[in-house]
Image (cartoon, rainbow, N blue to C red):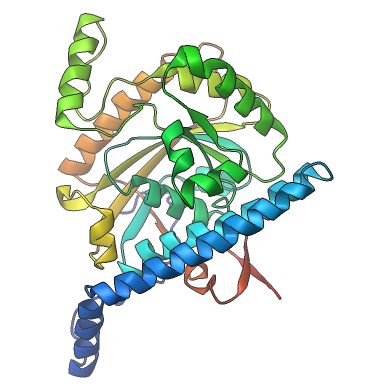
Length: 346
């Protein structure tokens, strides 16, 4: 259902099944079969690992630019990171044909990719980061996207190493030990030359029934609202990010991700070509509040309400997220633009 004032961007998605020619139907069946083959999975993994190692080596070489031009170093690494992350976005959009639909208003869409922003996202699914990257890619901030990540991820080959060169802020999730490191890392991003989206999982960890039960026991003991779909948020990371990036970040976007049919998607399902339908509802606040400690709790309360509404009657308006540039990035040198256009360079 499409609401008034909705922004609708056409999607170049996979062909829909219906009254199709038998030959085309056979070809589609063969393609679906090939996506389940282990040999192809090995090939996809081989390409990602080899290209990732090459990219990491080039990133290592760019460290020589830091004393000369910090901003040039950052711009180059944004493009190198885009070359790696776009391969994963391609798997989501073109290999599994998963559809990510953004529900928001025209004013919000017009600001996307044209400002620094803090993104709050619920952490319920294994592939929620991929859906977030799809949104980043569509609006030209995939390479410059940031996250407050746990320290263990720094040592993960390819992803953690790439994040290191992107100046990602890592934490041990122990505030007494993290305070100085997080504040220093956030302040270092205040002069970042590319528009960036800084992702925060306010819940701190992925949702499970066990974690939810313990979290709500703590909420009841503290007299806080009971959340049906979320864990009790950790507010220190959010308030610190807003305070340190005040004057840099122009907006805080609250994003609720849900999958139709109550499905619980997985990376393995994506690799096997299984199609999912993701809905992302975005609300915005443009002014960083002085006393923002209560904002994550309010955000997740509203997020739970949106999930209830989505289950009962479906969301109101849409923007389709899908671009062909991710499938071409391994062949051409592509510079993504926030407007959705693509400029090509030799």
